[in-house]
Image (cartoon, rainbow, N blue to C red; front, side, top):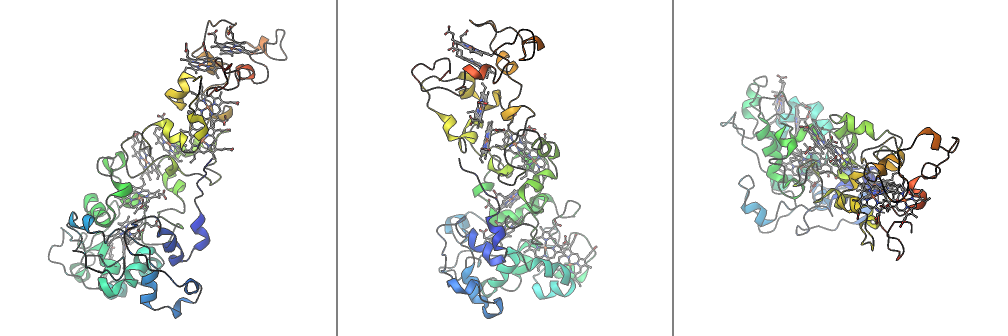
Length: 375
Ligand code: HEC
Ligand code: HEC
Ligand code: HEC
Ligand code: HEC
Ligand code: HEC
Ligand code: HEC
Ligand code: HEC
Ligand code: HEC
Ligand code: HEC
Ligand code: HEC
């Protein structure tokens, strides 16, 4: 069984440590300069900007195909010096005349924000790549050109802002992020239920402070991010039977892609069962004798987010089975308290494991004498 651990990067809370982990996740074709092993542990003052730049993760931002289709990105240089050389300044439709003024000017008025943002992957890495991106990149590659805003800081809209009440429209906000992050997991963002309901990237992400070990999240973990809105679902995981999500061993994103998918409800795979098989592979079979409702949909009997019955069951046994099986060859009448082990007529369908005492291989059997799932 594959259990996805969420916090490997927590151990490496250094920005560049996390950046190193990212290297595998995006953009195989981009260059990945080898970092000298000991340099990670030496004091950062001993590192030049160039050293830092070499340790940054590979990205697909340099991929020429992606670039040719993306009007927001400048043409690729033939030999990118760092993976970050693609940072460009997005246009702000509410301030078409504005020019870039450079990070130094922003920092002069926004020292506090700058201090927090300096710990984040984006700002640290755009800065390290400044030789190629120019000093604007650190702030203005997200916030757009700042000259008009600097002249009149209290006029809303003159700088691209990312909050819900901002003058900047959600489309422009998402457009800024998607200029670098389109495709991949976000292939189906446009048209997804989250996009339709007016969420913006910053409902879940906050690139201005290092709040999570990875993923630039708005809360310290994925599950907390989802729980800000889906409190009912998160609460179900507190029931007696649940998969180990509250224990931190699973995340909502093991099964869902919050950026959109072609399967309702935002599932990562084509069907519910395929999602379950990614971890419970033994339930896939093939079985000599299949139990039809198992093959059809695991949710016939299980409530994924949590249940107060044993093993995530939607109803207690024998009622679960009796929803579909009545009037079978052996007595299958509805049970009363008289049939309990302590009652006057103890019934083996209620004692111990109920129907499962005899029909133990309920997900299917490979035993030649297992057509009734006894073996
Ligand atoms: C002259 C000082 C000054 C400079 C220079 C300046 N800002 Fe601001 N900025 C402000 C002030 C003051 C506010 C708060 C305005 C308010 O609360 O109405 C602000 C607000 C903002 C906001 C929030 C806007 C909103 O609508 O919520 C962002 C984002 C921002 N600045 C980014 C930047 C960036 C990026 C730069 C550099 C390109 C920059 N600022 C340069 C003074 C400045
Ligand atoms: C990766 C994109 C990105 C970069 C780079 C970036 N910002 Fe931001 N900034 C954001 C987002 C997103 C928000 C909204 C955060 C939130 O949800 O509150 C924001 C919010 C702000 C605000 C509004 C106050 C706040 O904290 O909510 C200010 C001011 C600001 N940024 C300044 C800066 C400055 C100065 C820099 C450069 C040091 C910078 N930003 C770099 C994306 C970025
Ligand atoms: C100029 C390009 C650029 C823009 C604009 C940009 N990013 Fe990024 N972003 C990057 C790069 C480069 C990385 C680091 C390399 C990687 O993860 O592939 C990154 C990493 C990330 C990560 C992954 C971090 C991790 O630890 O896994 C998230 C999440 C993210 N960005 C969200 C955003 C959001 C939200 C916005 C808009 C507010 C945004 N980015 C704007 C270039 C950009
Ligand atoms: C409903 C919440 C939510 C929204 C909205 C959202 N994200 Fe994410 N995003 C996440 C979570 C959670 C992760 C971490 C996924 C993981 O580690 O499996 C993530 C991961 C990422 C990553 C890094 C990993 C990767 O897939 O490459 C990037 C980049 C990213 N998001 C960009 C964006 C952009 C751009 C937008 C807006 C168009 C956006 N996200 C909107 C929740 C969200
Ligand atoms: C800012 C609030 C917000 C956050 C944060 C949020 N969601 Fe949602 N989510 C919504 C809304 C609104 C809907 C639409 C509900 C509806 O229309 O019934 C939705 C719907 C969904 C659905 C149902 C899709 C469908 O087709 O029925 C899933 C699954 C989902 N979200 C998963 C997640 C996951 C996983 C996260 C965390 C990574 C997350 N959400 C974070 C607001 C949010
Ligand atoms: C083990 C896989 C798995 C995990 C983990 C998981 N979900 Fe789901 N989720 C599903 C499946 C399967 C469905 C479809 C349920 C149905 O059709 O009745 C679903 C349905 C949903 C829905 C829409 C239908 C409903 O029941 O309201 C939302 C919203 C949702 N999940 C959010 C979340 C959130 C938030 C988390 C994390 C706290 C989470 N899920 C964790 C598999 C998972
Ligand atoms: C990301 C991996 C993962 C996915 C995907 C997944 N599970 Fe699980 N599941 C687990 C883990 C881990 C456990 C706990 C195993 C243990 O404690 O031995 C578990 C336990 C269970 C249990 C037993 C619960 C109990 O109380 O004993 C059931 C039933 C279950 N999963 C059903 C499902 C169904 C149905 C799906 C698909 C909708 C699914 N799982 C998808 C990882 C996963
Ligand atoms: C006909 C009802 C039914 C269906 C459909 C069903 N299960 Fe189960 N499942 C059960 C019962 C009953 C138990 C408890 C078995 C026990 O206690 O021996 C169980 C137990 C489990 C367990 C925990 C014990 C074990 O055997 O590992 C997992 C995991 C599980 N089911 C996964 C799945 C998956 C994945 C699917 C879909 C492929 C599925 N189930 C479909 C009835 C069902
Ligand atoms: C969602 C409906 C559903 C549920 C719930 C369900 N089953 Fe079934 N079961 C079926 C179907 C449909 C068949 C296939 C019947 C056929 O082939 O004639 C089947 C077949 C069987 C068979 C083999 C029957 C035969 O004639 O070969 C046994 C034994 C069985 N189920 C036991 C159980 C037990 C025990 C439970 C409770 C743990 C259970 N079922 C829950 C629908 C269900
Ligand atoms: C004491 C053992 C035992 C218990 C407990 C038991 N069964 Fe059976 N069941 C059997 C045997 C043996 C057969 C095979 C009968 C045959 O082939 O003639 C069978 C056959 C079946 C069949 C397929 C034949 C038919 O009649 O259609 C179903 C469905 C079934 N059982 C469901 C259940 C359900 C539901 C329960 C719980 C309410 C249950 N069983 C409890 C032993 C048991």
